[in-house]
Image (cartoon, rainbow, N blue to C red; front, side):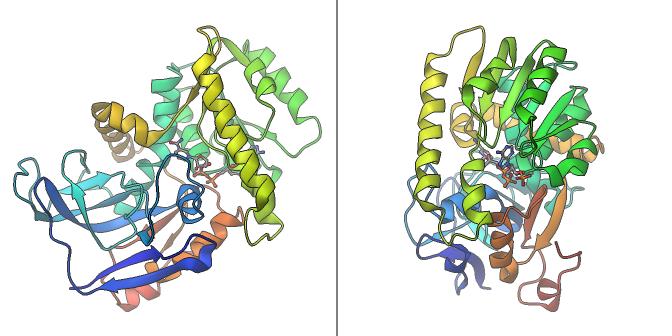
Length: 367
Ligand SMILES: NC(=O)c1ccc[n+]([C@@H]2O[C@H](COP(=O)([O-])OP(=O)(O)OC[C@H]3O[C@@H](n4cnc5c(N)ncnc54)[C@H](OP(=O)(O)O)[C@@H]3O)[C@@H](O)[C@H]2O)c1
């Protein structure tokens, strides 16, 4: 049986992605398992890794893309006692998940309930867990607390709004004007960042709420001082993404993000880091990093992801999946991500029998 995976041999645009085939299955070593992957990520973060813009990971080429995965264990290495062949698991791989088979350390895998479809469960790992931990672990938000979300129509933003709806937190979402139905459809108030007077509207909403208990910033599109001023006393700004730095470059069709976007990205990242180190108890700034947090608090990762799986099973959350792609279609998916054409999530389906018509002629409406 062959392994098929999405590899990049050079950093760059979607065109550097290729589907490669390895004749032999990898063998799990001590403390490892092999996973037959069913679904994996196609997200903004995969794009940052493809362009070598991901700040917290040292990347070596060639590499297989894929920040997370859901699959079934089909090989167990020596010394592994928790898992057996056939168990369903989830993992945060950072790279490597976009493959039909992967070998992963057994220690930090999380069980996936048998009844969940892999393509529904996969968005919970990176996108929903980020939103969940930012809201409830970092900002310590409680039901009733007002929340403001920048980048509200993206994968993390819509996940955060879905969780606010599920847990009863009044939310305001900021995204571009065309995204209003997606944001209001989850019960949130909407402000278009590209509308005249958006900043004044956000100031007014902040006053009406007595300040926001939590601000999740997935976009970094507005001056930090304005964002901070909208926090309630004791509130928390959780910085987690920088998508605004790249939007303009991609929308104008730049082949590369351009020097300005790269410099702004680096500047925003360093500024948030510095602020998070200096901020006081009254209005705090935190930089959230899902992988770093998992290393420091592995039990939280398992507990929170298990909670999300339970919420999905109970029908209390519903990931917004714009389209499911097969391996051969992944370049097209990355083009949509770069063009800002994704509302919610794209998912890579690796469960269809390899090389069959089912894989090539996937169902679902084209985005
Ligand atoms: N720290 C972590 O652990 C962690 C985990 C997951 C993701 N992330 C990061 O978080 C960011 C978002 O990830 P994602 O997967 O949600 O990306 P995404 O699906 O591409 O969404 C990005 C969103 O940003 C919005 N946006 C762009 N410019 C904006 C602005 N000026 N103001 C408000 N919203 C704006 C876009 O809205 P429009 O399309 O309407 O313009 C889009 O909905 C990325 O930088 C990603 O790398 C970090």
